[in-house]
Image (cartoon, rainbow, N blue to C red; front, top):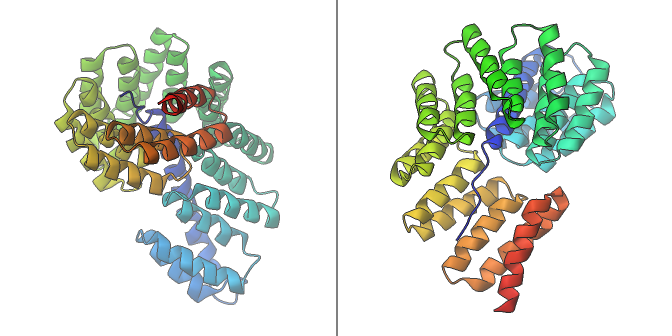
Length: 365
């Protein structure tokens, strides 16, 4: 059985979304100036803000719902509710909230950028780029949006265009570490490894204790087949940021490739302890468990990934393959058909072909 790992690209998509959420949370502090005599309803909004900051996102959403019933034209409440939904993996709902925010404030670069982040998690990279285009039209010197638009372009394989965005970000802010790291990843995708490692080295000179730089450099080494060297970078990232779930995810990826499945599961456990909404970690832990013959535990992990990413084609595809291995043919076929629908919606041509081939095998049996 050949399953598909959650791509390490997920790390970047999730990291972008988390950074966006942090920006929204900061904006929440600003909007509290409206508490007394403002057009926002103070009590509901303050409870929502308190729940949001404590990580009680479902409760915060309920509070925002109440606030919007009283103040339906509060654009920032739609935006912050969208961020809570994003954290819970409800990306389509989040995108809808940002859409409503933009209807109310159509010239907000901030709202376009947030909708772009939600769209990126749905694999809607072209739509995300269109939103970043609008954000940059409104705020042409926003380094953050140049870098994020570049990431979306890289995800579409448009690495040269992405590099142009990273170059512009670095012209505006020459010491922007994330621009160096992102450009390094794009250069590596073009096979320009010497230039890529130069960018990673520059990033490390600027921030020698930045775990993400080691993780990104490790990814390139991993792709070059330098698995032990990649593991060393991931290990350093864990030492630098032991409370960062994403660095455990990366180290687990290398451990699984080295055949260290039990150790990989341990790292995925740590990643999920720290980032419980990280669907990619559930997917990859499931695959490590399959290698150890733990099929029922693997299915439980896929089930959780489906709850977090209910429109992810490759999660359904992998769960379907695992159910087929267990002899659950009817359930497997249902998952494969669901995967095909979502893959077609996302325009994932390679995945569509793989799913269609597997469904054809089932129909021939």
